[in-house]
Image 1 (cartoon, rainbow, N blue to C red):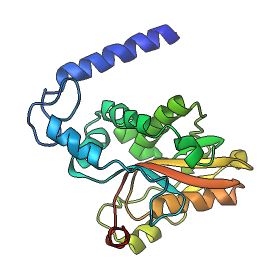
Image 2 (image 1 turned 120 degrees about the vertical axis):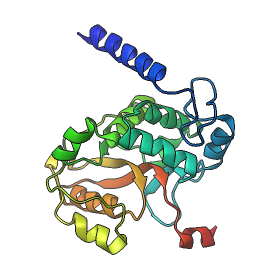
Image 3 (image 1 turned 135 degrees about the vertical axis):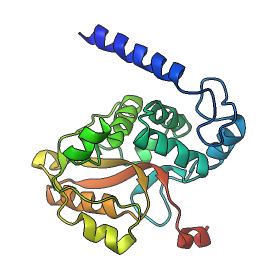
Image 4 (image 1 turned 30 degrees about the vertical axis):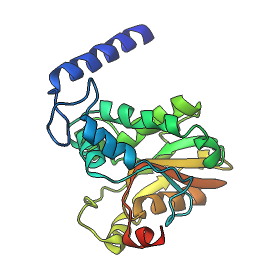
Length: 229
């Protein structure tokens, strides 16, 4: 069964690569080889890499990239157009952070920020879980996908400010005691205000987690952080 699954997965990736137009997902120029971006956009993405161990304005938050136009196009691709290969492409940049596990405090487990079951049915997958699985393979860490659940459907956060986002998420998550005593890293695709990660962190701590850090692919840098650099 495992071999059949791997074959189907490879066929699926081949079909996706064949169907996707050979143009950059951000600027629509011809993309570079089998990558989703062209050379100039690849340079912009590389320039957005975060080399610090921790995001300045959010203690305990670690991010791979500052938000940039090419990164936003890639994230929209896997969130709204089912281009899961963008997740593998972005997570491959973790090779530039070989000591990342030490920076994260040598965690016991990775926990993806959950989707509500209705949104999961709509999208077909949880992008945070796929990111966590890529990280787990790279750093040999277990992924615990069922410990944290989203029990209340919430409206999209996109157009809400920080205070509205926090109110929108109150009571949205519940965590089991399977995390008791564990050092946890929450995993998500993007951090804008930190409201979602903050609510999840509270639930994990209430359930007995010994330590909770967070990792995201993209961090939306706020003006106060820019002024501190």
